[in-house]
Image (tube, rainbow, N blue to C red):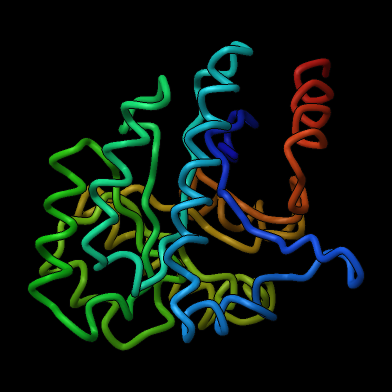
Amino acid sequence: MNARTGEVEGFEALIRWQHPEKGIIPPIDFIQHAESTGLILPIGEWIIDRAFYQLEQWRDQGIDQCSISINVSPRHFLHEQLIPHLELCLLKYNVKSSDVIIEITENVAMGDYLAAQSRIAELHALGFKISIDDFGTGISAFIYLQHFTIDEIKIDRQFILDIESNKRSLGIVKSILDLANLLDLRVVVEGVETENQLHLLSQLGCETIQGYLYSRPLDTNQLKTWLHERSAH
């Protein structure tokens, strides 16, 4: 959300396992197993395909001002099939690559620095944007900004939780915002849950906000209703 105008700027694709007996299972309960078994690759490709499909659906419905962010696992990010699959999705769906943001975490380059650098260049050549998710939680955060061509950083919610009472958290967020502004990077602040947090972040000059203050995760049918209700006000 744009904190200044209240407009929707984009969405993040999230996954939930709809188990026939246990109901909705959050990703924290199965993604690690998917990573260790290699199932993260077909799961990741399915998520990308569904995200492209959803963007196309929104375009057909006249919702054409929004982007969609897709979190790609470290294993999938460096896999040889990632680029061919993205190219296939671009051919399959009427979607612009500039409307798709590929989110990676700081540990992507831990295994192969040069491979990560090359993959980011490949994605940029196709027109995709690259975002660093959970920024500030790893020791390599600023090395990324120094050596990788990044378009966006997402400030991790742990810095926002106590921003109203902890001057250090507030100072860290301000420092990241100042640095991002210097490097011409877009910033998204995650985990915003209260009006006071929003007010403080707006005072710091942060425009793009994500969090439960606006909405909890929704399926596409719920999201359609949510968008309709917002447009009606």
